[in-house]
Image (tube, rainbow, N blue to C red; front, side, top):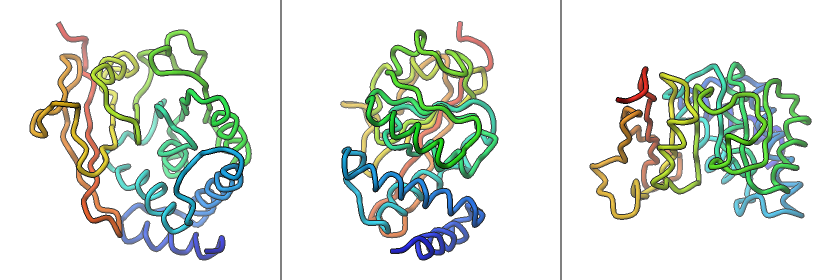
Length: 228
């Protein structure tokens, strides 16, 4: 699939699903993919290398839940890998001030090159682990984010605690749950993880074109005032 065909297919899909990408935004998404595939020859950035699969399983999977997310403010994408969902969300929602957090140094090198090549303003790649955020130098510190996203990363018991510490009051924590993935090991599907300072907003299913089962986005909102 050449660049023009990729962009046209992405635009058709965005119109079908009500995302509303512009031609320039579709071009930027394609440029991100091209850079990723180029670097993937040297680094293990993604196992998915077919452009049509990338369009669906990386780009659309990042963008379809956007209607449930804040559209402005500081955003933190935890364990972003090659930049999903953070870079597509930043392209779609330019008023997000996006911090891409990744522990792998080589992946961070790619992210810095990608952000420079795409010329995305107010977007940063930071090397480190979420658990160490208080010592990391980033544009917004703990408690300063309007949005925290986590995709293709397992939800651990401490994830909600870290989300609460990262979010400003009213901020949103969004977790992309894979198809059939449980909330936590041993937890029942009908019992989402709970933390006093976070209010569970719900589970939002969405369909990818060729997926046999719906994807799910789980959303929590930080309480307006600290619990207790």
